[in-house]
Image 1 (cartoon, helix red, strand yellow):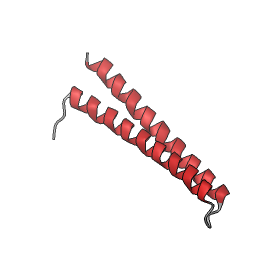
Image 2 (cartoon, helix red, strand yellow):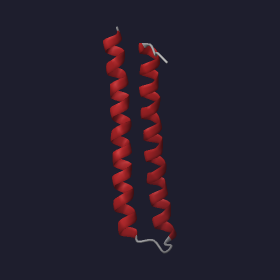
Image 3 (cartoon, helix red, strand yellow):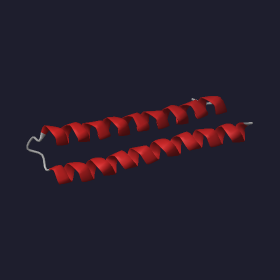
Image 4 (cartoon, one colour):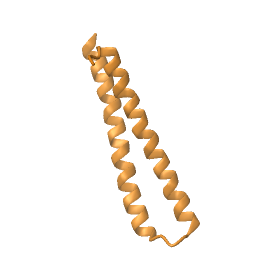
Amino acid sequence: MKLNIDQKTTLWSEGGKFCLDLAKLIFGGIILASIMKKDIDTGKLLVFGALITMFLAVCGFFLILMSKDKKKKGK
């Protein structure tokens, strides 16, 4: 399947938005899980959750920036 520059730009941009949405959901899940005080080690929850959230946020911003870069190169 061959994609043109507009389709690639849209694909990168939507992938970035998806990663940012996942980061927001994980961040909210961390807060809710720490409030509920179940049998969860809060320290591990916060560390792993923060790492995953930061990773997904960085990936999301990277994909969005790459989509804008591809749009500039296409013109």
